[in-house]
Image (cartoon, rainbow, N blue to C red; front, side):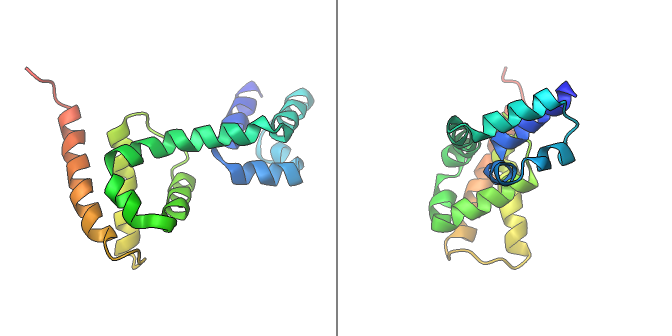
Length: 148
């Protein structure tokens, strides 16, 4: 049950949507996780605390950092669509990778798949994404090799 408590806390921190849902209906926590009454009560207290919003913001900022640093032009080209696209990406890939190039490469492939499926973005997104994703892929490959 402790593992479920820890997983629930991680999931809630990574998903403002889940937090909002659990605030409206705390029984969702017992439907999704095996919790003791004490664990459930603690989670309800945590998600009700005003600091939880900050925790979610910090988590999302940490997930956004690799993208902002490695593909800044793509982020800029996405403009107001960036928020929805990264939210969709994070929902699809809830577990992050601390290797910045792996996380960025995964996002680039996600975005390329969306474009291949016919999703349209701003005119510059495809061109900028192609250039930056190639640079990220090269940097990722380089990160796997040892320098002499």
